[in-house]
Length: 240
Image (tube, rainbow, N blue to C red; front, side, top):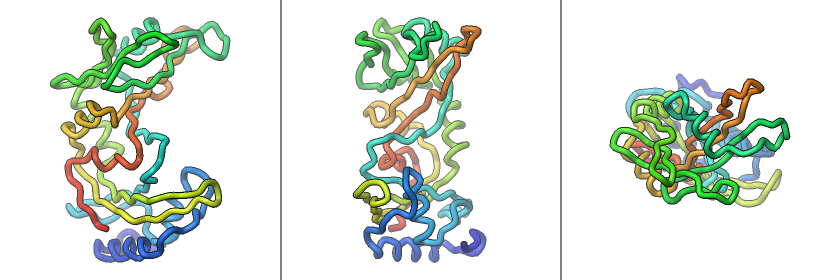
């Protein structure tokens, strides 16, 4: 593999153009990670430390345009610390493990109140300085402030070279056509909020209980379809 220190921005673009011109190519690996492995092999582009448009180093990421499974942007428990306890006690149901504990696995968006075991649950509500989870009666069950969201997003996505691919077929017969690439940087709270309001970004709540009864957050995450990831950034520069 060519060292990230030796590749230039123009070389990067040339490799991506050649990859695009190759058309559909069969996956080099079975499963979700096949798209990244195939792109790396075809373009000989290193995974990390790529030269970006603002003289910073970027990471490489790829995604299927037509993917139906969502990508976790980041995970973060809601505030205050008792939020998970409130959610679990209010909406939790008996664990499927039959251990006399509660759990709460549900997806929530800003468009409508979710349904939990056939009953109305809660939804996302956008406030001036935070993203909140509210019940149908208007009670704030938990929230994430603007600073927290920015820090979590930027720590995971400081800057990306994001390559999108058309895909067809399944398993080892899956094929990719890498035909679009963007430099993405600068988390945009404005865009983030807009995508939440549109229901493009959702929140998966995954709470269980420790033997002591204390809530256990299994990864409450903000999620988006891979093909929409680029919309979360303030600055976007299309390469191909």
